[in-house]
Figure 1 (cartoon, rainbow, N blue to C red):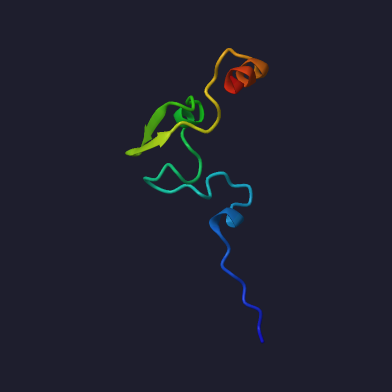
Figure 2 (spheres, rainbow, N blue to C red):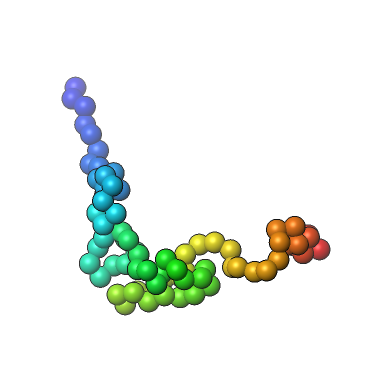
Length: 74
């Protein structure tokens, strides 16, 4: 009985080329725009007619982690 290999996913084919996953008219795959990469988590960025929520992460604020923890527990 032969061994069957599954087709390799695009990410496995990337091999160090950051643009290997780029898709025409689809900013969700591959390298996102500079505007998206520097957007705040609450911003909406439009690229190639697609609206993207800002990159993940918490909303920046001036409170320390201890202050946020205390506030969340009250």
